[in-house]
Length: 402
Image (cartoon, rainbow, N blue to C red):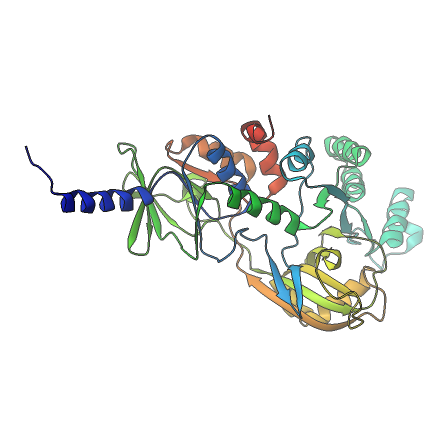
């Protein structure tokens, strides 16, 4: 029998302690709100949890910046899809209040009659359609009203009834009354209050999952971190190996990589001027110019005595539109053109971030993919907080149940 000296016991203890620091029950790659809620859920179940975040702050794409001497300027243009459980969960778990943010669409006049055609030759139905198109042309209207109109014109009876139900239900998107920052602040506070290890500024290069081994491996730089479970978001930029073979979600679902559109831009304007109509968040469909517009002025911290600007307007813009319209000045002019800002509004300054388009796997396909993965690997939907809360509500219910 080998007898260890005190020195050898000390060294062995140090090695074991070092080993213990790199072994977890669950490793979460990324820190979007969905992943942070999952981390808190796992920790509440007695799990030893670690979060790896390549940035120096938590939140993923839900983040704020300090711009022009202002703090907490939101640059994400996020929303929360309405569902029966969203409000209940966010209110009870994070004390987050939500307000309605109607969906809008810019009325397209593609259905207008050819200008060379004489109006006297039009049928009554086509005259009515032409009149409606001319009345609403290029104006912002509720999305559900647009859906109903297009369903009627296409004679799609099922879509007519569905659009009518949506219009009567009036189910808009939701937005936190205190902005997205309120969600991040609440989650950060809960993470700090719990024994969750956060590795800031550390990227996972690749992860290995083998069904015949009890622990999966996450490689970060020159170190291996071991875990019983690995959870990652669907857009995490990390190589995955399952049973020694490369695993690509899009290949499993579609037989190859997704065909992605061009990138997009988030741009924040410092504006001297006023809004033409009240809005906090507007979702613009049926337009290839601007996808979403958000007034982030109420959520930023600034000196109220300052007269240098009136508004902070954040836009989600397609890259092709940004160049086509002539950059920031053209985008601001477009906001005036579609009646969101009053004529005379001028840009004092702007800030923009460019992003590549990522492959967002549809809900059902992603959720079905989860069922095919080894038990130690999960890929979670992280790009829509509202839908994620609905889907994982029964699981996360433990976080709000006494």
